[in-house]
Image (cartoon, rainbow, N blue to C red; front, top):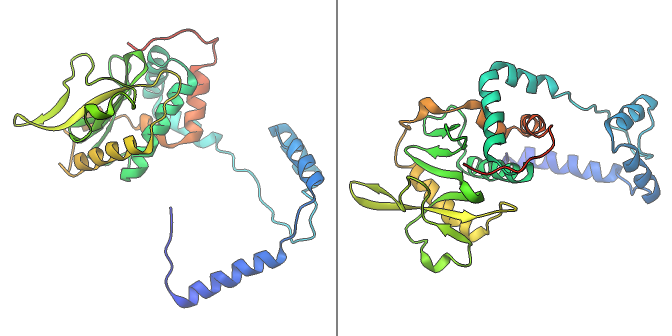
Length: 264
């Protein structure tokens, strides 16, 4: 989140405040810094350090701050939506190949949600858990993101993203089981559905993301609500946007010895 402040009086006050911080700052002794970093690598070490009241040596005024316990908030989320939480765990176990891969998928979903600015209760957004265990993102009436079999990642793309891009972008196919190569309206092609191979790590170049976001914004403007909103799972929104909950979720999913999994 960013804030633009244009009032001269407030800008001057902020500039004075920042200047004051620099005046009160000083360089840190490298050896002291390395020792301090080593001492707080674990939470138990952090707690002992806090009890000992021995902060990083500095002549500048100290700032007192404590870590916030986020465990309660995460437990409240799970308690509030216990059934969906369990279904999400089972879905990931069934379809996601490993923790890194599904975390990458959630990161990609987070990027597009932040790009659109959509909240969980927005009538245009649907984040669901399908019977096959997939976790697609739908805007209005169309998928914009979904993982597929063989570790494919499906993205909605504009019509001007074509075959000239396929080889270099590791394109697999233009559709999956039961899908079409295009999204239509009244028999007219409006967008493509493209599946990309992402077996080990889910990464996309900025040009691909630019095409994708262009198509997503077009879908966002097509309607004011989705006909599939009743399938929206708020817990999926939490898994995407709330990193504390996501970490807890994936810990529960992968607490057992890892097993080879395939996307259905």
